[in-house]
Structures are given as C-alpha cells and as structure tokens.
Amino acid sequence: MSVDREPRSVPDLLSDLLRETTELFRTEGRLIRAEISDKVSQLQVGGGSLAAGGICLLVALIVLSQALVIALAHVVGAGWSALIVGIVLAVIGAMLLAKGKKDLETLSITPDRTLDQLGKDGRLVKEKTL
Image (tube, rainbow, N blue to C red):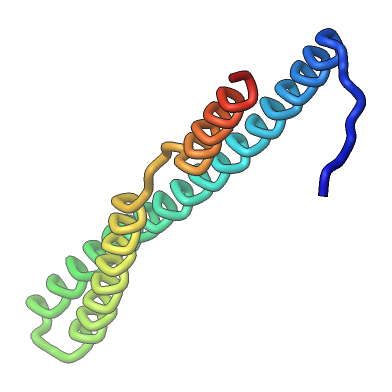
C-alpha cells in the first residue's frame, strides 16, 4: 500500500529533526536518571547489609568476650548461655557481611541500558540523515 505524502520543505524537515532530536535527548536523560537511581538503590542495599553485619559482629565480639570471662571465672553454666548468644550473633553477622559483599560485587554503576539505547539512537540518526 502506497501512501502519498506532500513534499515537505527543507526548513520543515530541519524543524522536525530538531524537535525529534530534542525529544530524544530528553527521553534519554530521563532513562539515564532512572537507571542511575536503580544503581544507587542497589548500592544502598549492599552497604546497609555490610553495616548491619559489622554491627552484629561487634556485638558478638562483646558478648563472646563477656561469655569467656564469665565462663573462665566461674566455670559454671551461666556463662555458656552468653557464649551461645554470641555465636548466634556472629553467624548472623557473617551471613549479612557475605550477602552485602556479594551484592556489591555484582553491582555495576555503568548505565548499560542507556548506553545501548544511545548507540541505537545514533545509528538511527545516521540512517535517517544519509
């Protein structure tokens, strides 16, 4: 099916090109801001896990130290309960640190989708201008 179009003047074509290019850059700007926002959110989650893991390990160290002192001083069961709590906190802290480290290792702050889209847009503009 053929569509008959009226011939358009060069100024009209240039005006359309400028308008479409401006809109393209605005859209790409919104895309890059959204993608960077996603990357920052991922970074915050990983950092939060690292901080929580570090705090748990610090508390575990304090509790384990107290448990060891109590266990050695009295050689009775009261200190062992503190020791169990300390070990549990240490395991939780280690798991949180491992999760945070894993989250940060897989994080790339490069806006890959935006760069891919910009490449496609550049090729499209070249095709239209040729």
